[in-house]
Every structure is written in C-alpha cells, then in structure tokens.
Image (cartoon, rainbow, N blue to C red; front, side, top):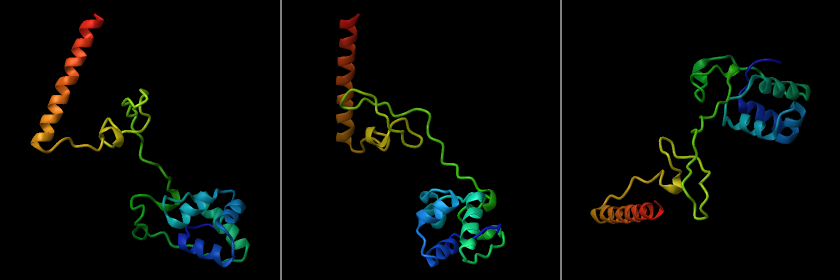
Amino acid sequence: MRGYFHPQSIKAARKALGWSQERLGSLCGISRHSVSATENRTRPIKTYAINAFADALNQAGAQLVPLPIVRDYYTFWPSVDPLHAVYRPEPKPKMRCRAKTRSGKPCKRWPEKGKTRCKLHGGSSTGPKTRTGKQAISEAQKKRWQKYREHQLISS
C-alpha cells in the first residue's frame, strides 16, 4: 500500500499488534532508531520507510489508511513535500576549535555557530562586562604579550 501515513497511526498499529520498534524495524529492514524517529517525527520520513512500514503492518492485519497530501497539514516540514522529504542536518563548520587543551593538544570540538571557538574555549563568551573585569583582561593580555616578545628576543 502506497501513500503517506500519519506517524501516530503507524505507532498505534504497531502497538495494537504488540510489536516492539525493533521487531517492526527488522521486518522492514530499517533500524529501530529510524522507527523511533518516524513515530516521534524528529526528522522527515523517507518514502521507502513509509511504504515498508505500511506493507509490514498491513500484512499483519493492521489497516492503515493513507492521508491525503495537504501541504498545510505538515507543519513540521513546511517547505518540503513529505513524500520526497530527505533529512539533511545543518552543515558542520569546516574548522574545529583547535584551542590548546590542558594536555597541550588541540581541541577537537566543533566551534559555536558563527564563532571560531567551542563553548568550552570561549565560543559562548561575550567578554567581560564590568570595568574591573575589563581591566583584569587588559592586564592579562599585556603580560602575555610581554612574555611573547621576550620569548621572541631570546629565540632569535
């Protein structure tokens, strides 16, 4: 049977048959995680998965009735036709945080959105807000630059 079925009707039919998500997934050739994602609508559902669920449940005696395709109904993916929905996660930034960790190795975490550092190394920080905080940062930077310049003189 082909068409689009509401995820809650798939879940209700599975539970009425007394099946677990693992059993439905194994009968359809789909992972349990995909069954869960379909039932909970955590990501768009692929056409082959919908059809596999419907075939397996209908062969077992559950009656699934396809929904008419109405764009207003699908508020979860407003700009995507549900029969051709493809899950595309947000692209990751190309560079990692690469701040030095306490062990001296570069950090492997992804930076915060629009930043160059991860949340652990200042990606979420907006900097000091008070006058004393700004003075403390200024003094720390002066000390760092002084050490850096001294090191450059010694090594050259």
